[in-house]
Image 1 (cartoon, rainbow, N blue to C red):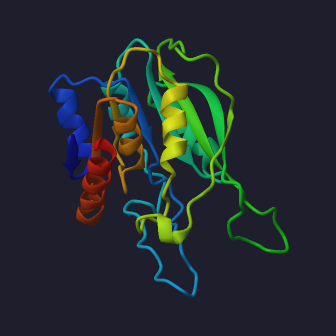
Image 2 (cartoon, rainbow, N blue to C red; image 1 turned 180 degrees about the vertical axis):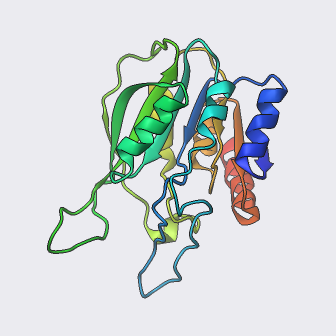
Image 3 (cartoon, rainbow, N blue to C red; image 1 turned 30 degrees about the vertical axis):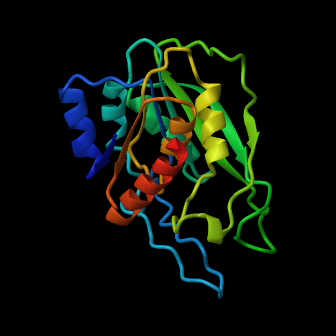
Length: 222
């Protein structure tokens, strides 16, 4: 199910209704003020809402929303914010279990002469209670090519569906519970859940991205 609205309001209403999910898998705003696609051949993408600061208010609600015995969180973040983000996750009640690296297979922009070329994103894996993987122990480095601007559905931090599928499969505990993405964006997490036959809940503030999600999930369900 897809909700258009503020994630804080929607998530709290789900908690108040007694909804529980198996896992939160998401790429939230975390203070980058990021704007991608600076090429001369195309328009720049819009900036993300709430991305001008470390936006953590949703984490305690997510903790209430996941099941108490083994509920999971997978949250992307940037390297500059990674340890502040880890502290925020822990302060919400989660126990951090692993740091996962997404190797994007080609580098992004930055200081071309004074810094290493960035090729990875960080994902924190945390749980509420003990969780046991059903498919064996996954590796901590995942390699998936970052899509080009012509393949990213106009989203500045687009994630490939293959990556989101691997993450969801990696943390599967065999319960077949629902996956929620409070920052659905263009819908890659939800498409991955649909392909894996998992129930899903998506929340997205942008009307434009909601339309994209509906289209992409409908295509995945065919």
